[in-house]
Length: 157
Image 1 (cartoon, one colour):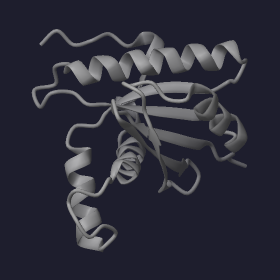
Image 2 (cartoon, one colour):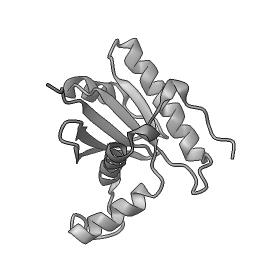
Image 3 (cartoon, helix red, strand yellow):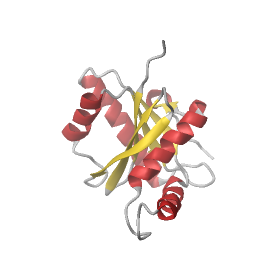
């Protein structure tokens, strides 16, 4: 019998971070929440509490790379956030694997889908949680592109 792993995807941002939940058994995802960020930092107690309360087994942090695959300033911050999250989880003895995953164009795709489906009325409404769903969908299709944070090395393109 295969056990389901609950996956939390995070669409990292400096002002807000979209969250989605995915189930490894059913390979589906759903928007969860949008957290306020303080200059790229979440309310750590709240985020870690959510991970513990929901029994999250894996966290995917979106890595907003440049279109040519090189790191952007935001992707460097997202990776630093992922390392800090992994460290915080380890300190609390929460056995949760943290990965970074290329999320190029996920926000634009999320906006287009949300408008088309009628989930938002204006292109200015937040879709960070929908972008996090797309991150999980990409992960289900190509899990080999997920990079465990401790082994991550920035590209030098």
